[in-house]
Amino acid sequence: MKKLISKITDLVNALAIVALLIAYLSPYIDPSDFWPVSFFGLIYKPLLLLNLFLALLWIFLKKRRWMYNVFFILIGFQFIARNIQFNTSTYAPGDIKICTFNTNVLRVYDNGNTSKELDEYLTEKEYDVAVLLEWLNKKGSVNSEAYPHQQFIRLNAKQNRYDYGIKLVSKHKIVNWERIKYDHFSNNMAAYFDIDVDGTIIRFMAAHLQSNGVSSRDYHTLVNVEVGDEYKSYALNFAKRLRKLIIRRSNQTKTVLEALEDSPYPVIILGDFNDTPQSFTYETLKKGRKDAFIEKGNGWGATYLKPFPIMRIDYILHDEELTCTSYKCVSDIKSDHALLEASFKLP
Image 1 (cartoon, helix red, strand yellow):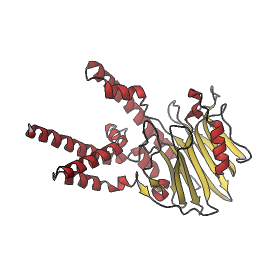
Image 2 (tube, one colour):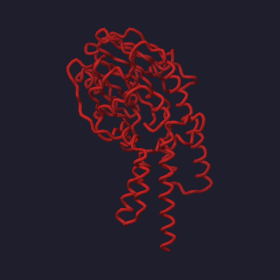
Image 3 (cartoon, helix red, strand yellow):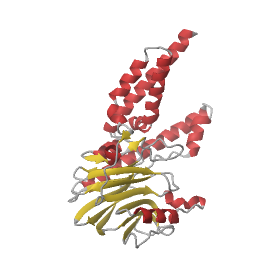
Image 4 (cartoon, one colour):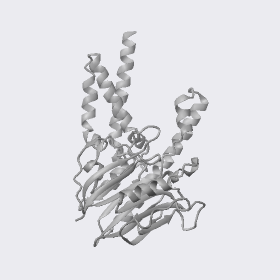
C-alpha cells in the first residue's frame, strides 16, 4: 500500500512540475499556432502555489523530492517577479497621475449603479487622465469641472441600448482619438487618445481584450458534476469555446500592437487584457515597454477580484522614456476589477 501511495504522489508531483514548465512556455507561443499552452499560462499562479505546497509537504515529511519543486520554481523566477513585487513610491509633485478601471457596466445589472460613487472618487483623486472601460454613457457621468476634457467612444458607430464603450476623462486637452477596429464582432474594444500634457503629447491606448468567457455555471459543472458522458461532452464544448476566445484575444493583441507601431508619441497602454502576465498577450504588448506594477507595485498584484483575488489581468504598460514613480491597486469601488493608478515623470 505504501508503494502505491508513493507512486501516486510521485506522479502528482511530476505532473505539477511539468504543468509549471509548460506555463513557462506560454508567453512565447502564439495561441493561433498552438492554443493549449495558453491554458497553462492562465493557471500559472495556482500551479506555482501547488508546487510551493508540495515542496513544503516534502520538507515536512523529510523527503528529498522538495528539491525538484524548488529547482523548477527558481528556473521561472523572472515570472514570479511579474506577479509579486516589493517597491516604494517615488512620486513627486509635477508627476502626472493616471488610472484605468473596468467599471463592470457600473453594476446596473444588480441595481447597484456605482456611477455616483465612481464620480466622487475620481473628483477627490484629481487624476490627470482616467480611462473607464465597460462604460455605460446613458447611466454614468463624470464631473466636468474636475475633468473638463472628456471623450466617449462607443463600441460601434451606431448607438446601442446603454451606449456602451470606453470613456476617457482628462484635465488636459485631447488632441486626437481613434477607435481600433477588431476583425470580428466583439463586446470588447480598444481606442487610443492623444493628450497634450503641458506641452508633451502622450498616446494613451485603452485596450479591452477578449475575455475567457468562464461563467459560474462552467465552474460549478466542471468541479462538481461526476465524470461521465454528460461531463465529457460539457468539457469538450468548454474547451472548444475557450480555444476560440483565446485565439480571438491573440488576434486582438496583434491589432492593438499594429495600431501603435508608428506612434509619434510616447505610449501608455492601459486596460483589461483578460490575460495573465504568463501569456502571449502580455509578452507581446510589453515588448520594449515597462510594466508599472513591476516598476513600482507592491504585493500580490491581483486585479480581478472574483471568485477570489488571485489573477492579474489589468495593466499599465509604458514606453521606457516615461518614468513610473508610483503604482497602486484600489478595490474600494464596487466592481469585479480593481482600479489601477500610477504616476509618471515626463521626459
